[in-house]
Length: 83
Image 1 (spheres, one colour):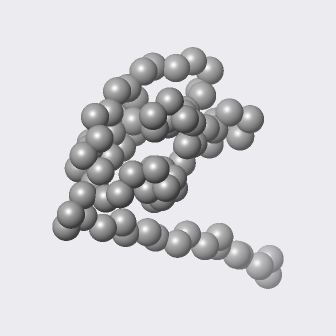
Image 2: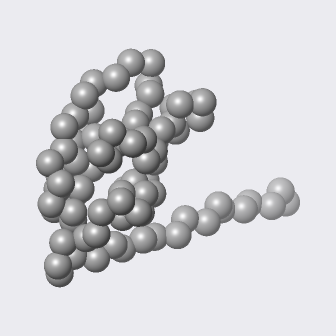
């Protein structure tokens, strides 16, 4: 629930939205905006999203507060060739 709490604080700061955390079951993690699911990990082996993924999805529904910006980080897989 720590991940969800820190993400909730970030959503409130960036978008000014009131965030309500509801504990789920079986590792399912969902984010909704105005009763529409904008992210779910159902069927993804309990993969947790990055903050950037969630904030980007929310931005499709709500503009950022003035003075706030989204910072995204690209994560590239590390390739270790066998020697």
